[in-house]
Structures are given as C-alpha cells and as structure tokens.
Length: 74
Image (cartoon, rainbow, N blue to C red):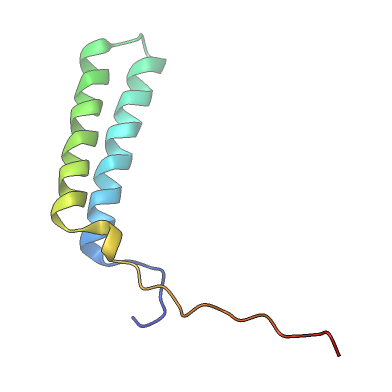
C-alpha cells in the first residue's frame, strides 16, 4: 500500500478493540453509572493499547514524500 494512510488489518484490530472499550465505558456511564461495567470498558481499552504496542501501530502508516510548494514569485 505505497502512499496509503489506511493502515493494516492488525492495526485496525487494535483500534476496534479500543473503540469497543470506549463504547462499553460510555454506555456504563449513561445507564447508571455502572462502575463495574465502566472499569470493564477501561480494561478493554488497556487490552487494545497492548495490542497496539504489540503490532507497532505507529510505524504502520506510510507517509508520502514532503510536498514542495511551487515558487510563484515570477
């Protein structure tokens, strides 16, 4: 995926797990708050963070070469 900003499926797995944990925690706050469910969501987020570290999510995106602005001084 040269020049792509999409990321790999393993990185998206980490993102989906983190979003799932955030959703669980948010729902827990809205329905009560239900603190056990909230902390379960925080635990899911932590698992997603570990997955992100294991798959090295920050080195996954391929960044394009820098763009040079045109010289319009003429």
